[in-house]
Image 1 (tube, rainbow, N blue to C red):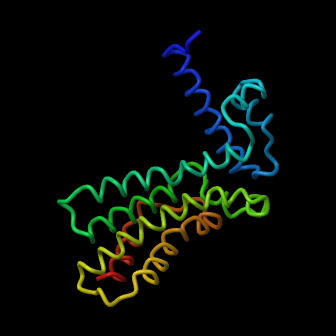
Image 2 (tube, rainbow, N blue to C red):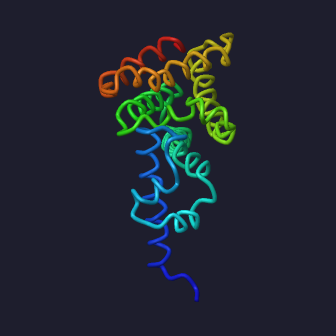
Length: 198
């Protein structure tokens, strides 16, 4: 029997609930301490049902991590397509958005990629492609901003590394201060980045 629209919506909804439950559990207990049974119990499904959406726990983690990359990469595509924006405006908007997202989300999901159990099991390698894609997005915008500012002699790789580290640093700052205020920090980080590329 073919899958109906309602069946498809139910599967999609269950998948999203699994991701949301795993996000909370991985963030509060850690990856290694969370079992697929824990995730299934939190969602209210049987453990075998979870495996119809994800083959292994590591696949869930990769999807959870993607939740931190996708919005920024989607915004990057939108900003690049908007020809009315200057290169400096594109970079400023991406930085401000990213800092707010890293500071203000309910869970510090981006930190999961730094956990020893994730790095030691090689799962982080699966997430590295997405991190590289995000880094390249920043590189494109930094290079454009440097060129627009007449600083084509500046090293875009070094500048991108500094910019990316400044934004990505919010992940670790949030460990020490879980109540970081993205509304306060995002404009300050944006201005620091713009000062580097002007």
